[in-house]
Image 1 (tube, rainbow, N blue to C red):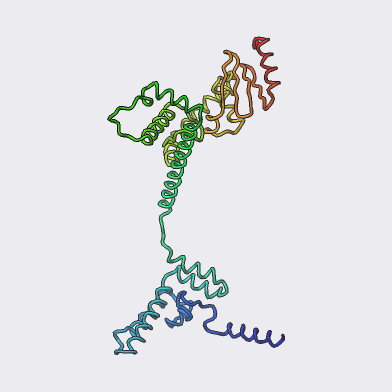
Image 2 (image 1 turned 30 degrees about the vertical axis):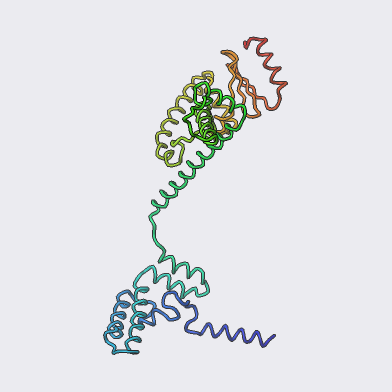
Length: 325
């Protein structure tokens, strides 16, 4: 055991004294020191590095060699000198190279700092524009997919299909007797009728919420372009709200009450458009149903009920008995 530990220690010491320790094959000057190749010290200025390069380049230029193996040797040496010069004359590469010399054990960091230099530099504005375009395209495609899913569901739902078929027959779009000259097959006629029913449902049905017909104004790109306009609209609306309900203490109107419910439930626009049902009982009373909530609005108060129909009906009768006084 002691013998093995001694061998490991000797191997480690050999690595420390080895001239190639800390150098990585394929990085910078490989297993050689760039400074030693140019014959300069690590503290050498750029002028000294340039001077050393020119001296060696003149000596080892391939044109100064003969033919055969000598020319090949000169070519390799000249490429090595040129590579060392390219690394040391550039401030950023020289800093990365010095970091590798000072931190030889940080292999991953040294690889990263080296290859980062050669990574293609892309304008961040182009990256943002492309990202927004891809997100907008996916968003628009997803909206159309949801809408088509809702239409296909309504086409198969008996309640809506019967209504659509009745409308199509009333308008003379389907159900007419076939002409003898009509050479269409039964399958072709069935497919055309399905398309007509689908078109009738698209035109007559008011689909809201997350499955509504896509509007190009809802995609991210258009939202960003119109954001200054929306901001001005919101500031105007908020100023009116402060003036009417915070300062003048006016009673909430129907639209303002619905806004407060939406805000209270933290519902998105698509969720809100799909769910609430408004029942105008009289000029002084409104009933709003949203999901599992029921709200009774009077000119003076708001009452909320959740999964409690008995209390809701009791209070509704009380309002009617006292005529909402």
